[in-house]
Image (cartoon, rainbow, N blue to C red; front, side, top):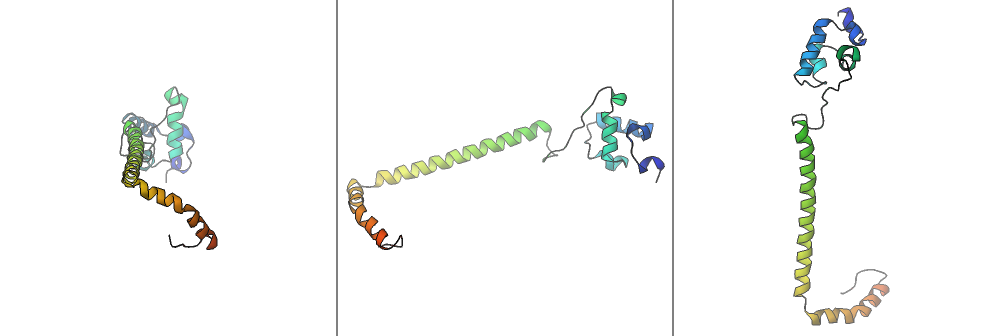
Length: 138
């Protein structure tokens, strides 16, 4: 193994050919996690070289990968937003379906049936108390 690959100390041990390769890869939009495999250098050494103000004049950020590296950065944000909107819409639709179902059942109930249930309520409560909360015949 060459001596300059044993310990990475930033750009001091970064040969000009590798510096040029990193610069080209960076300009082409290569991700930081791809560069070490292609160059045979550590992530830290490449990151230090790119972020060294002597080499680039100001600190630069290399593109980082996220959970969806195959999507462009704007699409990742939009896909998360779209996913959230779909979840909210689904939940709202579910609530509306439940509300409509309850309303349909309530409308189908006859007033006499409801009055009978209310009139029997004290008997039901007594049965539940007698069975200590167990099953009743109702």
